[in-house]
Amino acid sequence: MLTIWGRRNAFNVQKVLWLVGELGLPHQHIPAGGDFGGLDDPAFRARNPHGRVPVIDDGGTAVWESHAILRYLAAKDGRLWPTDPAERSLADRWMDWSLASLQRDFMDLFWGHWRTPEAERDPALIARKQAACAAHFRLLDSHLAGQPFLAGDSFSLGDIPAGTVLYRYFGMGLAAPSVPHVRAWYARLMERPAYREHVMMPFDDMFGRLAY
Image 1 (cartoon, one colour):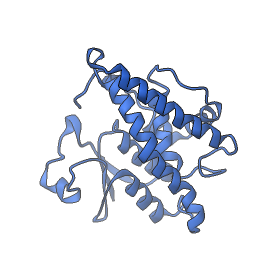
Image 2 (tube, rainbow, N blue to C red):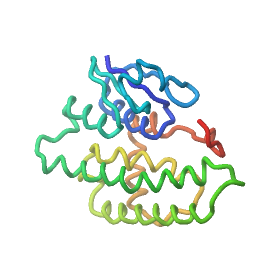
Image 3 (cartoon, helix red, strand yellow):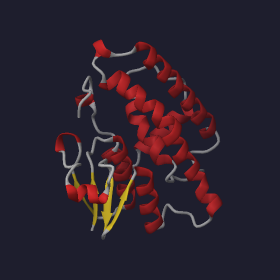
Image 4 (cartoon, rainbow, N blue to C red):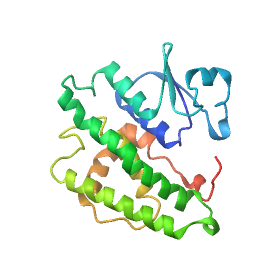
């Protein structure tokens, strides 16, 4: 049995649960981290010495780091894992870009605006991160002008990391750039049951709350 540890409202955990939902993989989910605790338990640390979620255990194989988990599950299942390295790299590029660029700036914006109490916010930081995110989404919009999904004509692993950002980015009430192709991509993702179940989760309870 595949076991997944993490909070359902944790951004990186949502990526994993979304993929598991797409693939229809039987699994057990164990809430961990934040109010649930458990990250310092010896059994958990034995699976991930860094003490962070998500973590999976697949029949004794423990994997941590969300993108490593995505690749592991897709490779094992095969349906979202092209055998041709060049084709597979189309998704890989967007996965790594999302982690190194989009997610870094978006999470700074999310924490700076949404998670930080209003009296403690840094307007200059928020403005910088809004501008950075707008630039990222304009880049995505240009790319998506010629295709429906990030890696081409069909849904792939490449859509998951960047796609997970969309629900919160467009739901925070901040000004967003005009990105019609990104909006159309978002609409296509919202048609997917696994996206609706695992990503489109209310996050009002995080507003102004720095602690988990």
